[in-house]
Length: 368
Image 1 (cartoon, rainbow, N blue to C red):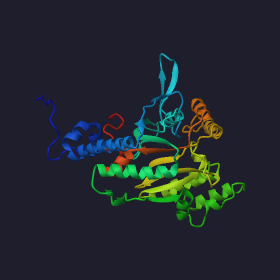
Image 2: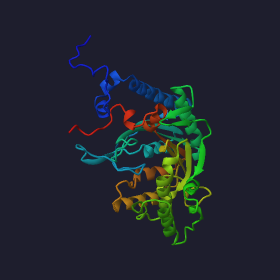
Image 3: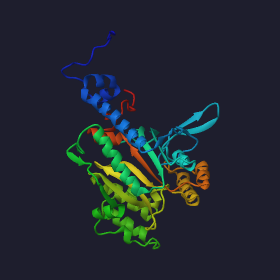
Image 4: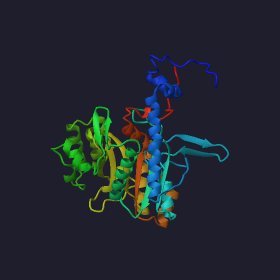
């Protein structure tokens, strides 16, 4: 036995203060069995994910956390400094670029479950450090990634229960396959029935002003629309403001504008779009995937466009990654890639309302 120098919380009242629960997770786990059960299930979920992928022939390969420049996503990074190398570094905002370089090297199925760091806001669905899985498979595309996503998520759900119909808040979420697939154009049109982005002529200089007017008429705030420079950006903003929160059941939103997808392959039949999907459920994004861009010339142009945005003050835009471009110039096979936010998925599968409920020790401000 070990001496307890501090008494436990009152048995009758328990530990109910939310902030206290997060700050003293050890007490939370002692007095709230349902919290222990959440983290037990999280462990089973991640174990199931790895086991499924290993059984399919994927290899988990670790990639660097410290990067010389940010890339692989649009997000503001944390910055640090290496003393002995006299080198400014960032914590990774994605594992994507290094994993795709492994495809160039000859691996055909790779993944990594790891911690990601983004210097952004905090909410019930955002934490500065979070866990994601990114996986890449050669000789497949985003349609194959949709099938794989369904298979993986359903397998994880069954690893902690016996049903694919789950409660989440006041809703019942059905994970029964197949899940709904809808283009971004079509889901936006459901909320803006009097306007069709797909009907706009990309060569017409008036198309952008028409799109902005339609967005404002539909209720998108002027501050959200005013600075947008292309129709694709306006379409994406309309989706985020008008549609995203209404996607309660699992839904693949497919075929995104090229402007918001700098690493995705151009759509084979739809100019101006890319072969990309995001998975939404309970009104939030759970996964992001696309057919990977393999053309180094196109990739350089998109990187340079991102770098121009960064130079203009966009802190979330990425840099030009010369090492990744050199790898692409060597030749990367056609591939599909998928990223899943583990924390948000655990929230769904355990009926947890906040991301802090599924992270054992979330980052918190010091007590005043």
